[in-house]
Image (cartoon, rainbow, N blue to C red; front, top):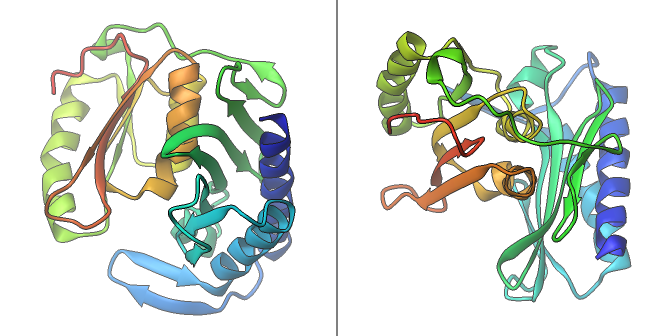
Length: 248
């Protein structure tokens, strides 16, 4: 397992360096929608990660936001978001990350989230302790919603936005603070290390949350992932420290 985690860390750092070098530089927009932007740098970062991982493990598959590579029924499948927080990145907001997870027979067994601007790297493998820059961490112990900081994600479709707004309004009234940060993977990492007490999203992709999922669970928290019947390959997620009562 260690060789897989080490490879994921190396790939995340390499992609992070690419993103850091191009931050605040002119960026090519591949597509622009009402609530999203796709950049050429996303594609370049995933290609870099793909080459580094599959060169070492050619029998593995890769499932990423910018496309898939290899036999997706392979026992080992890398789940990659090469730039989570693309809109932040495009607008010069230094809050984005690389997320890399490894699934073995469908189970997430390793995860890495790397914030190249703050040089913060969360990492864990199955059976191990999650670490942030080498130091172990746990989820928060806060149980009262009135004392909690909650991240509520607003997804990119009308249906999920319409579902998320009432939830945000409810949490704004009941929690100490709510945050909308623009990077699901970093939200998950922040729950894992106790900065946030929960993260809620109505429609999210696996590559956004796979690494954060194992980070939170190994740090003592809980993740409830449910496929959405109305949105292909999308999930609703409630991730928390496992003790807070969100009333959902």
